[in-house]
Length: 298
Image 1 (cartoon, rainbow, N blue to C red):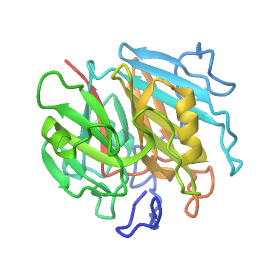
Image 2 (spheres, one colour):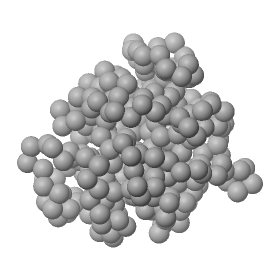
Image 3 (cartoon, rainbow, N blue to C red):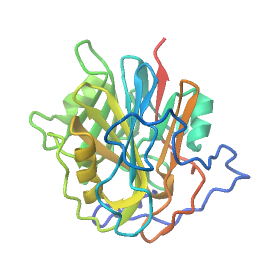
């Protein structure tokens, strides 16, 4: 989802060209994980695939309680929990070789997991504050965006990954920037207590999100079924009540999640976006200028 500089409400996308297989060879037609049969009692019919891929990477597939208003999709939510003590998270940007589709990023940087980093401007920079390992990509604190993902602690005693909210008790952006080498700003889906935020945006999207649970594990979220974000926030809080916060990182056909671990693969891409691609036809990973990638700690 490319966001223009002037935004009304939660965001306004500009037309994007659909990737072709000739220019984007790293594509996939898979929308469900090729994992072991589900053993999760909460997984609904058609949402199989829960289980551990490798130590430190767990997948949970749950069926949303709400039917999508647009009448498309299987209602499956994919949640991938990753232990940051065993897998290092980092922000990759255009300066690292993008834009690339998720499989291209995975292959180029030898990543175990890839997901969108945040919404981006037409020049490829993040829509809000974006600092990658101390390198400032966009130094502007966007007042419309209330959430911050922080990686790369600069001192001992800090969490490997952390989520912050502008209205959370004790929040100071200057302190976050001093404590962490990487900071990415996004809209929030869940508040400081892990409760759903009431988005006013009436549009429906396939979506990707990033959260942190109370055990400190990173949680990568993808739902191809299009929902209004207020609905998805409620579903996410219900599906995983241990989340301490979550950020919306992309919507529409660009929403991407790729995990390769234990000889198995989860390959999920979005499709539907109100006023842009109002269908479930997309089977390609779209090029992304910025991604969150994870690699095994050696």
